[in-house]
Length: 249
Ligand SMILES: Nc1ncnc2c1ncn2[C@@H]1O[C@H](COP(=O)(O)OP(=O)(O)O)[C@@H](O)[C@H]1O
Ligand SMILES: [Mg+2]
Image 1 (cartoon, rainbow, N blue to C red):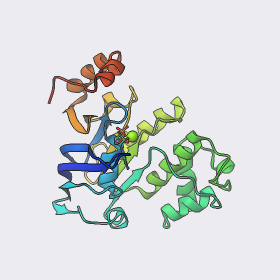
Image 2 (tube, protein in one colour; image 1 turned 90 degrees about the vertical axis):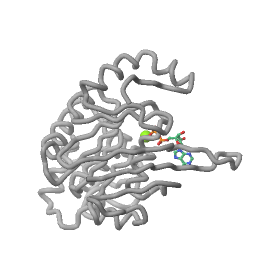
Image 3 (cartoon, protein in one colour; image 1 turned 90 degrees about the horizontal axis):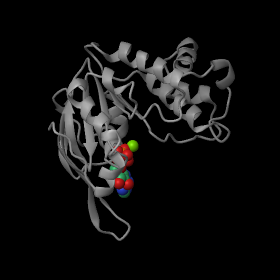
Image 4 (cartoon, helix red, strand yellow; image 1 turned 120 degrees about the vertical axis):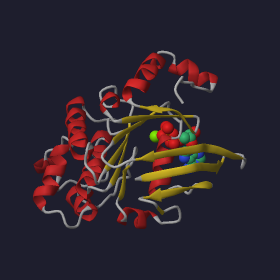
């Protein structure tokens, strides 16, 4: 189980003033479950993922993996413990082919697995394995390759950051099925899917709504989904007012 305890994070704004992007995050992610993390843009979802992965360092609070504190571990140490993160905006690596990056991500995976991981994200291996990961690939293709790396690595805790962004509907459905069949009820694994997708949220085990750097609501899809749906029309208005509020805490 992954536990976040009182996670707070401050950054400097343009004028050097400190401001909090995560205010007090207390939550836990259990094995065998698929979690949806949703909420308005700028709410802090990717920042939480980056704190879990060790890309961002929290200003206060603690992280525990299976009871062991991992707060001070580096990114690679956390990766070795089985935490994996597919970026919302993946970097492009010029000069490396797609086969290169997939093999680097999972050195023990054979070519059959490498090819399957590409098919799982809607990319035909014959068309992509030898292509350069630099310019010339669309945002959706880069996103697919990022997710293929995570699927290949098959970590204990997998965080998918907006897998739907730039990815076609057919692939999203396929990916969703794959995530559910891989993680739901699996006693060794947890999936955290940061998403705005209406098809994804209702089928997850638990939903966390993050807004303004805090957990604004959490619960089962039945508890939380109606609130989100009701809120969709007035989301922009609420954002403009600088707050979003749900009934369930
Ligand atoms: N490294 C950073 N430096 C300064 N501000 C940041 C940094 N990372 C995130 N933020 C700010 O923190 C807030 C939350 O960002 P983010 O976690 O990316 O939100 P979300 O993923 O929910 O859209 C935003 O206002 C964003 O601009
Ligand atoms: Mg984000």
